[in-house]
Amino acid sequence: MRRRPLPLLLLYAALLTAGFGAFAGFGAFAGFGAFAGFAESAGAYEVPAMPDEKLTLGKEVGDVRLVDSYGKEFSLRSYIDGKPLIISLIYTKCITACLLITDGFVDVVDKMGGLGTDFKALTLSFDPADTPELLSKYRQTWRLDRDGWIVAGGDKKEVAKLLASLDFHYVFDNASGEFMHPNYLVLLTPGGKVSKYIYGVSYDGKTLKLSLLEAKKESSSLSVAEGFLLRCYKYDPITGTYSADWYFILEVVSGIVFFLSLFLFLLSKKIYLFIRTGIGKTFKLKV
Image (cartoon, rainbow, N blue to C red; front, side, top):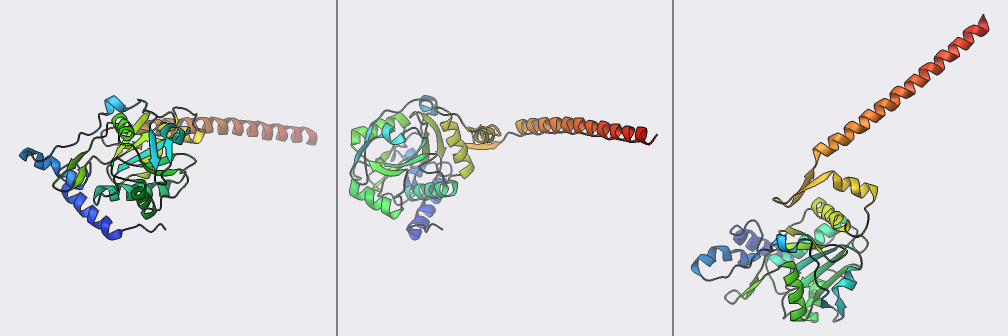
């Protein structure tokens, strides 16, 4: 079992996020940032906006140049390389929600499997002060030395281009010394288009897996099993989760029962005729 790093910090982050998050809709904003919705009435904070999905979903992000935790520059498009990509947005000095985001992200990826083969992951820092050295420490702390997972930052302008494509906003609070930012994962299609946002700091494996199948549909055909699994669920944009499409499932089950019944009826008829014919032949021979 994966040993989670910094358990005391995770507990501390959870308490802060849970406490302040009540003001911002169950973890939609980071620790002190969640408190901004309350404090804004006093004119003390600027609340960063949530992404406008009508403007971003289905839109292609730019091919920006990023720098990984080893100090190597790479292009986002080359890293995607024909696979869906999950992006988590953090900064390394965060002591609240970012810890929970990464912990939840690692946990759900470990449970799902398929990293590097079915999809890729990118932990991206939006803090211009995060150097490759700081990103390297973050990578080591969370044991993200994995095929298909990169921890990266980069030039402020390049990162800003990507954040603009995702409609991600953050604000630095001088009083607390932390960034206020919304908490979510972003899924990109193999072609680099924004496919879905998954909000919060804890992620459901079924929702993420089905979201990856949705993203994968853009540039490659799903297997029969994948297509059937995806068809059996419908996405609820209000709750951000998938639920079983019982109408479709009942239709499929009814169809299977009908054809199975028809098959058994025809088979039984053939057996009956075979037995009857055999009995008739036997009777004639005896006569």
